[in-house]
Each structure stands twice: as structure tokens, then as C-alpha cells.
Image 1 (cartoon, rainbow, N blue to C red):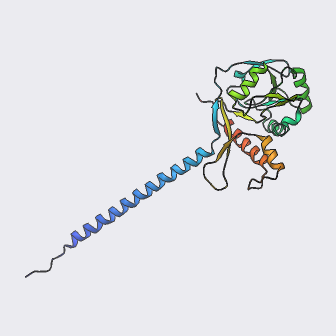
Image 2 (image 1 turned 90 degrees about the vertical axis):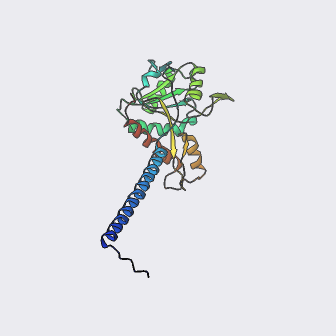
Image 3 (image 1 turned 90 degrees about the horizontal axis):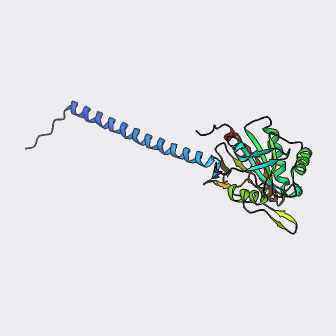
Length: 254
């Protein structure tokens, strides 16, 4: 005849204690896994928010040029600084109007900083010599040391703009007018070429594109909306300023 089992209260308490310990351990494990996942998401978003790197100016890409005050300089003089560079045709002011307006505001914002420069390469150095460039600088009220208008060998400048700075097209003449990409190129202290990181309205990886203010102005003229209160030009300029500020806060990598 079977007799009912006698339960040991101490064993029951021990079993209950182990169950509680296992539940706590499992909870800690799940929480740790969740926090690890969360950190990865934050890191992923931070990566998206970083200024896009699309290339680097080789420290062997040295060449000299003449600034608008007729003084000589070279690309390596800019290494270690944060600098804005673009192509211009000063005799065609309409061709870089949108870019020029942004550059003037940047020049005012970062005035007096020895670690920031604006460099405008003439795409027509044969016709736009230092005297012509100096007249434009005086008209705009800008000058050294913050703002450089520069010229060098035409073929070399064109290849530098297209191949080294990753602009969309090689400058060329069409019906007597210069056709070129007037986008702003941003270079950091370590010579990395940076691009705009534009967040998307519906999430997902942001769009990495050029600081093309001519295109932004064209979109604004057509009534293209950004989905926020800012115009396309304002949003792009805001991203540029944000990127410059971030890069100026970073030291040169040893």
C-alpha cells in the first residue's frame, strides 16, 4: 500500500531559492543583451550622423599656386586646417552666386580663426589673373588670411577639382562660357574630403551628397519642399556649418 510522500520544507525552500536565482540571472542576461543591442543602435545612428568621407587628398598631392595678392602658396599650407574649397569663374558671377552667398556668411562666422580657410580656384586662370581676383576680393570685402582666391596651371586646376576633390564634372568652355561644378568641398584637418549627411524624413540611412548650393537654390526656385521649416539652401547650409563646427573641434590625427 502506497504512503503519501513526506515533503521536506528545507528542500522546498532551497528549490524555491534556486528558482528565484535563475529567474534573476535570466532577467539580468536579457537586460544586458537589450542594452548591448541599444548601444549598437546608438553607435549605428552616430555613424550615420558623422560627416561623410568620400576621399582623401594625398599628402603627396603637392602643388603651388598664386593667391590674389600675387603671393605664392601651396596645398600643404592648408594641411592641419579645416578648409572650404570650390571652383569659380569670377567673370561669370552668376555661375557661383548661390555658393558665394554661403561663403560670405561662413567667412563672417569663422572670422579670425587661424584653423579655417576658404579657397576659391579660378577655372579660368589665363583670363582671371591675380589682379582680376584681387578686384573681386575687394568688391566682396574679403581677403587674406581667411579667404584665398587662387590660380595655377589651368589643366592642373581642372584635374585637381575633378579628380582630387571629386566634383561632378571637368570644367570646360561651352559657347564661350565656363561650365563647371560650383559645389563646396569641405576638407578636414587630416585631408579627408567630407560630404553632407542629410537625414531622411522616414528613417533609414541618411543620404550622403555634395554641398551643392546651386542645386539647392534651383530646388527652392521650383518650390521643392524639405519637409521642415527650412528651405533646401538653409538646410544644406545648416548641415555644412554643423559639420565645420564638428571638424574644428577635432584635433589632427597623430
